[in-house]
Amino acid sequence: MTEGLIVSSYIPLLAILCPATASILILLSSKRPNVRESWTIIAGILQFSLIASMIPTVLDKKVVQCLLFPQTMFGGIAFGFKVDAFGLIFALTASFLWILVSFYSIGYMRSLKEHAQTRYYFCFAIAIFGAIGVALSANLLSMFVFFEILTVSTYPLVIHEQSEEAIRAGHKYFAYLLTAGVFLLFAIMMTYYLTGTTDFTGGGIKALRTGFETGDLASLTLIILFFCFLLGFMKAAWMPFHSWLPTAMIAPTPVSALLHAVAVVKAGVFGIVRIVCYIYGVDLMTSLGLGIVLACIAGFTMIVANLFAIAQDNLKRRLAYSTINQLSYIILGAALLTSNGIRGAMIHIPFHGFMKITLFLCAGAIMVVTGKKNISEMGGVGKTMPVTMLAFSIGALGMCGIPPACGFISKWFLCLGTLQAHEIVFLFVLLIASLLDVVYFFPIIHTAFFKQPEGEAKEKEVKEAPLFMLIPLSITAIFSVLFLLDFILGLNVISMYFYRLVEVALENVI
Image (tube, rainbow, N blue to C red; front, side):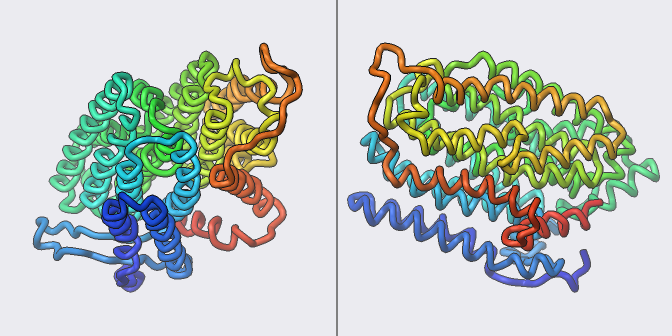
């Protein structure tokens, strides 16, 4: 990117400050619940509007920049924000879904009369502050700061229940992700030592490529550095560093949705794609043979996570293992180092976000209305909660890569990516993983719609969750379908913005 393509603006900073400001107002409004929750909604809408306003500039192949401190303060490293197409995809997804989860949280927290609601909304706002900061970061240093803010702010959300089990889950969560932070910081310091920069650059940092070609940087050093980055992004929950995620399902359902669809794990896979495409670059990844190594890790995670998912009766834990599997689809797409593979990886970040958040919001609605958490107890739920289970079915079909949900598109490009890379074995891995998705999602749908409740009357009155919960999960399900229809039919309602962002991002990578 040349300097002529950079547009200086305070919009990224204002977008970042929306949830930060809201968090303070939430604390000040702790004794006025309606006002407290209004700050969350207002901040979410304002933040999304600011982020969306940068779409035309980025589609014009420019980068929106806002540097907070002079480079001399950090040894030549700028601290601030640079909004490119890939970062904007993640930011748009997270900010839009925050609005929906905020509405859902109101219905969920009030229905269950949850304690410490002010702390909950405060930490949620700080978590989104961290997630959007990760998305819009100019370089590895900025990303690291917001990455750790995301880790610390989500800990109180994980232990929200404050039971012994929740505290243990929180300790495990911290143990994994703070350890990951140490590896990430080391990798960033080594990158700066080797290259003198930590900036994200389309095609990778030139100094790494040049150093490798001239022999100044030993290949072993670059390989070790890459694995330090991978360990630094344990938020991506690749195996065997995954067990913190199912354990964290003790958290309230909106928090689970935050962890899986909006912020935490998405930040992890976002970081890995950043390293592959914007630090190392496709050419260096290919020269070092790191693409095939990363693809093997992703393939192993996909298959094993699905096998674990099949064995789970608790709905949220099954969805947690499904997330571990789906995240590795994104990692595999990046690891293929082909245009279609990376395209599939980038598209799957928002698509998975919309589909998985639908599933978790439905799980929370079922729990609030029926008190049921296990799949074996959900016979007949589809008849008493038809809207919720229809939305769940749409999300489940999308996870399997089956129309009418948008998961079909991203999996299609991932399959094309394996053919483009001449890696047929990973095509079979994708197909087997998708078949296993069917194995553990379809029984949930069958139980809900075709099995009778045990020990209860066969006919029960239709009773859905409160509208604050029902409307958000319906919207995410509808969007999951609209993404596919817009793509196939060429309606140019969403694709004129979203898909073009993906294509602009690819131009800087391949």
